[in-house]
Amino acid sequence: MKKNVVVTGAASGIGQAIAIRASQDGHRIITVDIQDSSETVAKIIANGGKATAYSCDLRNDGSVIDLFDRIEEGHGDIDILINNAGTMGRWPLNITETTEDDWYTIFDTNVKSVYLCCRQVLPGMRKRGCGIIVNIASELAFKSAEGCTIYCASKGAVVQFTRALAVEEAKSGIRINAVCPGPIDTGLINPTLGEIPEDNEEQSFSQTALKRLGKPEEIAEVVWFAASEGASYMIGSVIMADGGVLAS
Image (cartoon, rainbow, N blue to C red):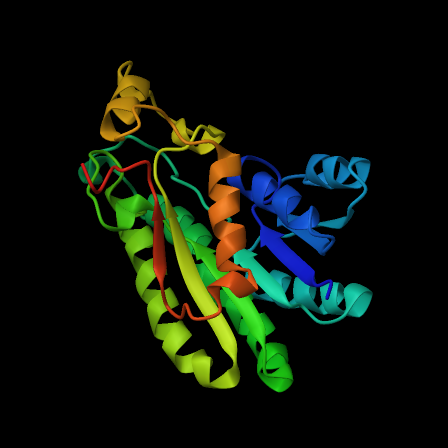
Protein backbone atom coordinates (compact mmCIF):
# COMPACT_ATOMS: atom_id res chain seq x y z
CA MET A 1 0.00 0.00 0.00
CA LYS A 2 1.44 3.34 -1.06
CA LYS A 3 1.59 5.99 1.65
CA ASN A 4 1.94 9.73 2.14
CA VAL A 5 5.32 10.40 3.73
CA VAL A 6 6.24 13.80 5.17
CA VAL A 7 9.96 14.48 5.54
CA THR A 8 11.05 17.71 7.23
CA GLY A 9 14.42 19.30 6.60
CA ALA A 10 14.35 17.64 3.18
CA ALA A 11 16.15 20.27 1.11
CA SER A 12 19.56 18.67 1.54
CA GLY A 13 21.71 16.22 3.48
CA ILE A 14 20.10 13.44 5.48
CA GLY A 15 16.57 14.75 4.86
CA GLN A 16 17.04 14.70 1.10
CA ALA A 17 18.48 11.19 1.27
CA ILE A 18 15.53 9.99 3.37
CA ALA A 19 13.01 11.48 0.95
CA ILE A 20 14.71 9.88 -2.04
CA ARG A 21 14.97 6.51 -0.31
CA ALA A 22 11.29 6.53 0.68
CA SER A 23 10.26 7.41 -2.86
CA GLN A 24 11.99 4.32 -4.21
CA ASP A 25 9.23 2.20 -2.68
CA GLY A 26 6.58 4.10 -4.59
CA HIS A 27 5.28 6.32 -1.79
CA ARG A 28 4.25 9.94 -2.30
CA ILE A 29 6.82 12.19 -0.65
CA ILE A 30 5.97 15.57 0.84
CA THR A 31 9.15 17.52 1.45
CA VAL A 32 9.11 20.32 4.00
CA ASP A 33 11.90 22.81 4.65
CA ILE A 34 12.42 26.47 5.44
CA GLN A 35 14.76 26.37 2.43
CA ASP A 36 13.71 25.52 -1.11
CA SER A 37 13.38 21.73 -1.38
CA SER A 38 12.49 21.70 -5.07
CA GLU A 39 15.83 20.06 -5.91
CA THR A 40 14.87 17.05 -3.80
CA VAL A 41 11.48 16.87 -5.50
CA ALA A 42 13.10 17.13 -8.93
CA LYS A 43 15.44 14.22 -8.16
CA ILE A 44 12.53 12.07 -7.01
CA ILE A 45 10.41 12.88 -10.06
CA ALA A 46 13.36 12.29 -12.41
CA ASN A 47 13.55 8.75 -11.04
CA GLY A 48 9.85 8.16 -11.60
CA GLY A 49 8.67 9.01 -8.09
CA LYS A 50 5.95 11.29 -6.77
CA ALA A 51 6.81 14.29 -4.60
CA THR A 52 5.63 17.77 -3.67
CA ALA A 53 7.58 20.54 -1.94
CA TYR A 54 6.29 22.77 0.83
CA SER A 55 8.06 25.66 2.51
CA CYS A 56 7.48 26.27 6.20
CA ASP A 57 9.13 27.69 9.30
CA LEU A 58 8.56 24.70 11.55
CA ARG A 59 9.36 26.78 14.63
CA ASN A 60 6.11 28.72 14.27
CA ASP A 61 2.86 27.27 15.60
CA GLY A 62 0.54 28.96 13.13
CA SER A 63 2.74 28.12 10.16
CA VAL A 64 2.82 24.43 11.11
CA ILE A 65 -0.95 24.28 11.56
CA ASP A 66 -1.43 25.87 8.13
CA LEU A 67 1.17 23.55 6.59
CA PHE A 68 -0.55 20.34 7.64
CA ASP A 69 -3.96 21.69 6.71
CA ARG A 70 -2.62 22.32 3.19
CA ILE A 71 -0.92 18.93 2.98
CA GLU A 72 -4.03 17.04 4.06
CA GLU A 73 -6.23 19.10 1.76
CA GLY A 74 -3.96 18.39 -1.19
CA HIS A 75 -2.91 14.80 -0.50
CA GLY A 76 -5.11 13.29 2.18
CA ASP A 77 -4.01 11.44 5.30
CA ILE A 78 -0.41 11.51 6.47
CA ASP A 79 0.80 7.97 7.08
CA ILE A 80 4.45 8.54 7.98
CA LEU A 81 6.11 11.59 9.52
CA ILE A 82 9.89 11.85 9.63
CA ASN A 83 11.05 14.77 11.77
CA ASN A 84 14.50 15.52 10.43
CA ALA A 85 14.71 19.33 10.49
CA GLY A 86 17.57 20.48 12.69
CA THR A 87 20.41 22.91 13.24
CA MET A 88 23.59 23.14 15.26
CA GLY A 89 23.23 26.91 15.32
CA ARG A 90 26.40 28.88 15.89
CA TRP A 91 29.24 26.62 16.85
CA PRO A 92 31.73 25.93 18.24
CA LEU A 93 30.97 28.28 21.12
CA ASN A 94 31.61 28.06 24.84
CA ILE A 95 28.33 28.36 26.73
CA THR A 96 29.34 31.79 28.06
CA GLU A 97 29.68 33.01 24.46
CA THR A 98 26.14 32.00 23.55
CA THR A 99 23.06 34.18 23.73
CA GLU A 100 19.42 33.54 24.47
CA ASP A 101 18.84 33.70 20.71
CA ASP A 102 21.25 30.77 20.28
CA TRP A 103 19.21 28.76 22.76
CA TYR A 104 15.89 29.47 21.06
CA THR A 105 17.24 28.96 17.54
CA ILE A 106 18.51 25.49 18.39
CA PHE A 107 15.69 24.33 20.68
CA ASP A 108 12.91 25.72 18.51
CA THR A 109 14.36 24.06 15.40
CA ASN A 110 15.38 20.75 16.95
CA VAL A 111 12.72 20.20 19.60
CA LYS A 112 9.76 22.54 19.16
CA SER A 113 9.39 21.62 15.48
CA VAL A 114 9.18 17.92 16.41
CA TYR A 115 6.49 18.68 18.98
CA LEU A 116 4.47 20.89 16.63
CA CYS A 117 4.57 18.40 13.74
CA CYS A 118 3.68 15.44 15.94
CA ARG A 119 0.80 17.37 17.47
CA GLN A 120 -0.68 17.99 14.03
CA VAL A 121 -0.50 14.45 12.64
CA LEU A 122 -1.47 12.49 15.75
CA PRO A 123 -5.25 13.15 15.74
CA GLY A 124 -5.59 11.68 12.27
CA MET A 125 -3.34 8.74 13.07
CA ARG A 126 -5.33 7.99 16.22
CA LYS A 127 -8.58 8.09 14.28
CA ARG A 128 -7.25 5.58 11.75
CA GLY A 129 -5.56 3.46 14.41
CA CYS A 130 -2.19 3.50 12.67
CA GLY A 131 0.71 5.76 11.84
CA ILE A 132 4.49 5.97 12.01
CA ILE A 133 6.74 8.74 13.30
CA VAL A 134 10.53 8.70 13.20
CA ASN A 135 12.42 11.51 14.94
CA ILE A 136 16.04 12.24 14.07
CA ALA A 137 18.13 12.81 17.19
CA SER A 138 21.92 12.41 17.40
CA GLU A 139 24.70 10.46 19.05
CA LEU A 140 25.29 13.76 20.88
CA ALA A 141 22.16 13.03 22.89
CA PHE A 142 24.37 10.52 24.71
CA LYS A 143 27.89 11.90 24.23
CA SER A 144 29.26 15.31 25.11
CA ALA A 145 31.04 17.49 22.60
CA GLU A 146 32.95 20.68 23.22
CA GLY A 147 31.45 23.81 21.75
CA CYS A 148 27.86 22.61 21.20
CA THR A 149 26.31 22.23 24.64
CA ILE A 150 22.90 23.56 23.60
CA TYR A 151 22.76 21.22 20.61
CA CYS A 152 23.59 18.22 22.81
CA ALA A 153 20.82 19.22 25.23
CA SER A 154 18.31 19.63 22.40
CA LYS A 155 18.99 16.18 20.97
CA GLY A 156 18.71 14.66 24.45
CA ALA A 157 15.29 16.28 24.62
CA VAL A 158 14.30 14.71 21.28
CA VAL A 159 15.22 11.26 22.60
CA GLN A 160 13.13 11.60 25.75
CA PHE A 161 10.26 13.22 23.86
CA THR A 162 10.28 10.24 21.51
CA ARG A 163 10.29 7.67 24.31
CA ALA A 164 7.51 9.32 26.29
CA LEU A 165 5.28 9.97 23.28
CA ALA A 166 5.83 6.44 21.96
CA VAL A 167 4.44 4.96 25.16
CA GLU A 168 1.45 7.30 25.10
CA GLU A 169 0.55 6.55 21.49
CA ALA A 170 1.25 2.81 21.29
CA LYS A 171 -2.30 2.04 22.43
CA SER A 172 -3.56 3.90 19.37
CA GLY A 173 -1.54 1.72 17.00
CA ILE A 174 1.05 4.42 16.33
CA ARG A 175 4.75 3.54 16.24
CA ILE A 176 7.23 6.24 17.25
CA ASN A 177 11.00 5.72 17.28
CA ALA A 178 14.19 7.74 16.93
CA VAL A 179 17.40 7.41 14.95
CA CYS A 180 20.67 8.89 16.22
CA PRO A 181 23.20 9.57 13.46
CA GLY A 182 26.87 10.02 14.23
CA PRO A 183 29.24 12.27 12.25
CA ILE A 184 27.76 12.46 8.76
CA ASP A 185 29.16 14.15 5.67
CA THR A 186 26.59 16.94 5.33
CA GLY A 187 26.56 20.70 5.52
CA LEU A 188 25.40 20.48 9.14
CA ILE A 189 28.80 19.24 10.29
CA ASN A 190 30.17 22.64 9.29
CA PRO A 191 29.38 25.66 11.46
CA THR A 192 26.81 28.17 10.28
CA LEU A 193 28.66 30.98 12.04
CA GLY A 194 32.00 31.28 13.73
CA GLU A 195 35.17 29.44 12.81
CA ILE A 196 35.59 25.71 12.66
CA PRO A 197 38.76 24.23 14.21
CA GLU A 198 41.15 23.14 11.46
CA ASP A 199 41.32 19.62 12.87
CA ASN A 200 37.54 19.17 13.18
CA GLU A 201 37.24 16.88 10.14
CA GLU A 202 40.14 14.75 11.34
CA GLN A 203 38.55 14.52 14.80
CA SER A 204 35.27 13.42 13.26
CA PHE A 205 37.05 10.65 11.40
CA SER A 206 38.96 9.45 14.46
CA GLN A 207 35.84 9.32 16.66
CA THR A 208 34.28 6.55 14.59
CA ALA A 209 35.33 2.91 14.66
CA LEU A 210 35.12 2.98 10.85
CA LYS A 211 37.51 5.96 10.69
CA ARG A 212 35.28 7.83 8.26
CA LEU A 213 32.25 10.06 8.14
CA GLY A 214 28.91 8.44 7.41
CA LYS A 215 26.97 9.11 4.24
CA PRO A 216 23.45 10.56 4.26
CA GLU A 217 22.28 7.54 2.27
CA GLU A 218 23.47 5.21 5.04
CA ILE A 219 21.34 7.03 7.59
CA ALA A 220 18.40 7.08 5.19
CA GLU A 221 18.43 3.27 5.06
CA VAL A 222 18.26 3.07 8.86
CA VAL A 223 15.49 5.65 9.06
CA TRP A 224 13.47 3.93 6.39
CA PHE A 225 13.81 0.63 8.22
CA ALA A 226 12.42 2.30 11.35
CA ALA A 227 9.50 3.51 9.23
CA SER A 228 8.88 0.09 7.69
CA GLU A 229 6.80 -2.87 8.77
CA GLY A 230 10.07 -4.64 9.53
CA ALA A 231 10.20 -2.48 12.67
CA SER A 232 6.67 -3.41 13.77
CA TYR A 233 7.78 -4.47 17.27
CA MET A 234 9.81 -1.33 17.95
CA ILE A 235 8.19 1.26 20.21
CA GLY A 236 10.20 4.13 21.70
CA SER A 237 13.43 2.63 20.42
CA VAL A 238 16.52 4.76 19.86
CA ILE A 239 18.61 3.39 17.00
CA MET A 240 22.28 4.34 16.91
CA ALA A 241 23.85 4.80 13.48
CA ASP A 242 27.10 6.42 14.55
CA GLY A 243 29.87 4.40 12.94
CA GLY A 244 30.78 3.00 16.33
CA VAL A 245 31.39 6.29 18.14
CA LEU A 246 29.64 5.25 21.34
CA ALA A 247 31.05 1.73 21.18
CA SER A 248 34.65 2.92 20.90
